[in-house]
Amino acid sequence: MADSAEQSTESQTSGGFRIEVTSSGLTVAEINPRMFTPANCLLYGVLCFALYLAYRPDPLMVVLFLAIMGLPYWFGKAHNMRCTHQVLEVIDVRRGRTVQTSSYSRAEVNGIKFGAVAYSRYGAQCGLIFEVAGKRIKMLYGLKCVEAQKILHELQNLGFDVCLDVGMPMMVEMELSRRNSWLGRWFV
Image (cartoon, rainbow, N blue to C red; front, side):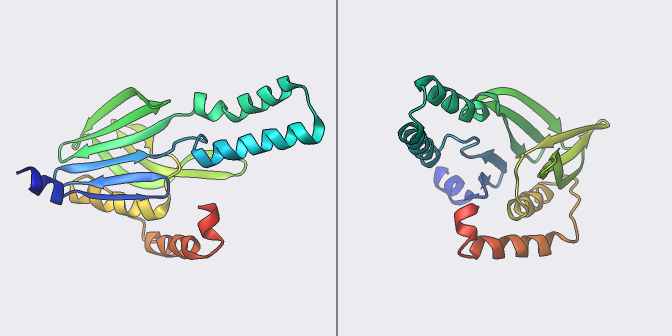
């Protein structure tokens, strides 16, 4: 029995998210949600050492630099998702711990779509948006169109009300082309 459950699990990690599809549901989680990946820690260490060698600043300045670089870790939050045939859960995670879980029944959830969830003067950050009792719920901040298309199709298979954009296949094709270019591999 356990072997059949393991065989029906499909897992994909790309675009900063881990997507797990099983016969009973869907789980989407942000991976390395903030800047403290091993590569970034090494980069910060090299930058601090170079700053120290070049300018011989006060050690307090180096500590201040590291503290500023760590702000996203302390104040950042991920909005993950777990979904079954009956329930969609939005899970807020801060510093690796679950802060809040909101559950919505399939009948309550209306119009799940891919769109802008946050704006700045530099552009929009995308994710998934849906409505529950007239309230707009936003999740999966930083989601790319390739992963969004897979998630939306899986949600549709689970019976949720999903709004698919007619331009999504073209956006996915452009994103995959960018990811496959030699320059895209360094910056994705």
